[in-house]
Image 1 (cartoon, rainbow, N blue to C red):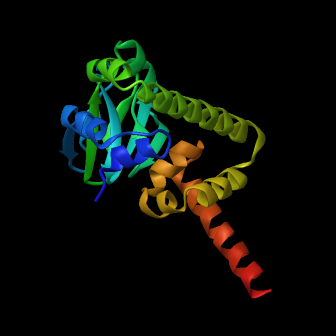
Image 2 (image 1 turned 60 degrees about the vertical axis):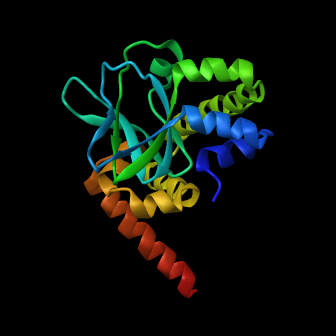
Length: 199
């Protein structure tokens, strides 16, 4: 079976088998149990984090101790503190395994060498950063222009697997609402969908 990271890269760029091997040999696979941290607030993000198994969230804690989920990810997703990784400075986010998870870690220093050794990698990361930027802007727009039920419906449609796998409290935080309120919305959506299916 093809390495999941290499598969992700080959969806956007051409990599020879030798180049793929070169990349794999310089990455590190790590397993994290549910609830364990990959990065903590204040750490410098030394690695790009690519999920190969399980699910992960990144979040920050405000001055009142309230958690705010910034990103959710499952297999095939990059997660982490992008600003900390790009600028190699202490980060603001925690990155935590939601399920028992395995990730591929791509060291920052290796990535800089990779840009020179395999120029196509720069294009791959440019695409990843562009996609992340666009996704973030869409999310901001949704939060400002949609009511809570509409935000949940968009999430459910775009990320059905996450909706099924990720604990409700984390999805609620990601959508900017309480878990209790999301529970009410999900019941309402379920009843509405059931009525529509019966008509």
